[in-house]
Length: 209
Image (cartoon, rainbow, N blue to C red; front, side, top):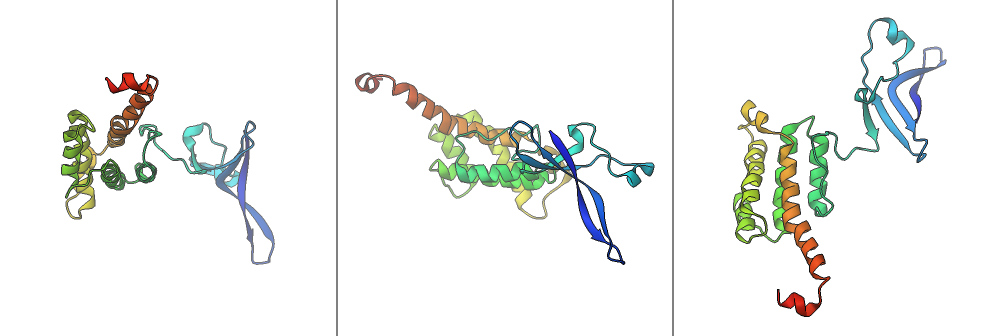
């Protein structure tokens, strides 16, 4: 990996050019030859600042700016491949903002759950009834529906103004993303896998199952 410190071109009062080093690095991968942009947040103390920002000692001192990371936190699981596109967009947005604003992330995941219910053909007057209907139609197991209701409870508190308290913030954790994956797995992935297995048998045999 080749690293280059990016600099700003500035002019003084006499019109002379000066290159000012920044905390932004451009890296080029020796394997794929693709570029990426990183922000170096390594702490600088004393006279080091006069010599420029030192190179980061490890990856923990770097934040990738480009290409944008779909999931920033290691605690947040990736969305499943079978996640519907509209739900996927909300999931990715929630993952990107979660560390900076858990409340915003929770509200987006709640909206993702609502859109997922609609994708599965269930749209009731509120999201609680939609989750219950998913279980009633056996689209998802009852235990998964009960777990997913945590998204509604946490998300509701973050989309209605004036009712957010510190105790609500403490309840928010990356597990809310797992609930979306559970529903996708049970409602979309597993039925698709079962259909693929059944297709391996002769049609007459399948009809008798």
